[in-house]
View 1 (cartoon, rainbow over the protein chains, first blue to last red):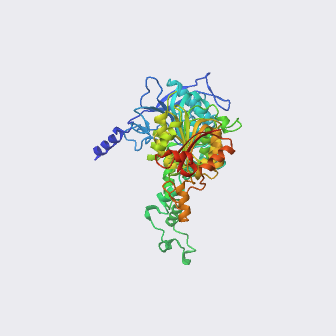
View 2: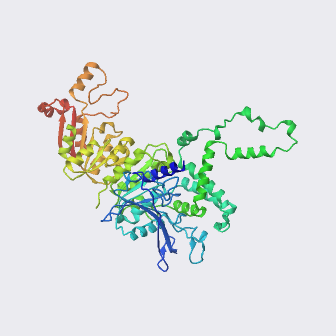
View 3: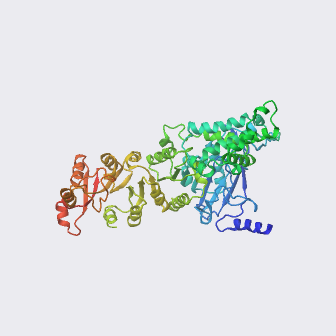
Length: 418
Length: 194
């Protein structure tokens, strides 16, 4: 039996469309005194970047595609780090042989962002000067700072000009920032389900998430790394709110409806046991019964179960302080800052652009993508845009969808090298 | 294919072209292959636009009625508005935008004064239905039908130059169509500029 399972695992990894087993690599730079100057003016270093690459960099070094992950993502975008990994990387449906980011043609790179918790320097890293965890000593960071760090990585990989940069959500902000900051460093960009500036509603959702974390007593002003008590309750509430905003009403309804856990039907004639009979009023309610009530308040519906499951897996892999720092960077994102308008801000952009929004995405609605499209059009930039009709909400870009894949594939085939 | 040929004959090779209402990009592909143009498109339909992008075309999903204002002056060598002007909310505004954005423009439309349409109204007393205008009166997208005369009149009022024209109608018998296009042309193509 075990052998069968093992074989299946190998099948998955050896599939002709998978990049197979991959290794996360690390690059460290900005050693003192040559620290990186952050947007805040703070000089920071050394910085380690964790990254993965798929496919081969060609002789001319002009087939590089840099993909940027979203808030909760990491450098592991495709394939498997270990044979027994249950799931592949976060964009495995997009990256691999014959897939839109075809690793037979392109050299795909993905790095964990600055401030992250999956190998790149962030608040959960150790400050080499104090030998302590950074915690809140970690400096304030911006989307532009994250881009600067990845530019160092691309320089280190000796890539003069990327073939394309691509990302969804926060990844889309990074892609947009890249083509603005480094107009000569990418032929094209794929900017998915994102915005040129975070809106009040988007900031509000992130702010509840942050509030949940800092209100958790275990957070302890960001010093929880040594106590062994992570502010997991706060982080899981943050994740649950986030997760609701990533899905559409339709997708949630289809997936869970009003179903109860274990298909336990809410039948009120069966809940008589919860109604206190007059004869029992004086007596304390049985402890077991109380427990059951508490459980019902916590998880009764399938959708609740799902949110709990999602948040429980999230708290195991994510650092609460990283969540605070990264959401702050996202909220502060406004690419037109310091310019009269968005069109002026994007004046120097040279990359051919594909902008994609999703009809069911209410967190990053199409109007925000259209602002980017409008500004690119005003600047006479070769622009392609589609609002794809998908039912999955903001998370649509992470879902294996044929139309989405063929749009990305078609766009990549149309890019000419200048 | 014939319509493609008429348009492609007017488009100079290696020029930059924007097709309004490009659908899944059939005409864009034709011009790309035959005239080596830098092809761009604008269309409102998500399904058709994603189909066009999937074949490697630069297409923007948008509304011609509202979205032309974003393009800078003279940002294209040609704009092609093939068989769409009569479905616009404000065809006059769209035409003015087209003239502003493109060096030259190709406008084509069904001529509502075509003699078979005239006869059809005269004898049946009902809204005409033809091969080119197959809709019922209540579900027609053609909300601003006009004639060859109307178009020429509008161009002269706006000081638009008519550089060339092409009519289809009575098969190969071209002479009556060109003598009296407003009567004999079923479909008209104009090459115009500011």
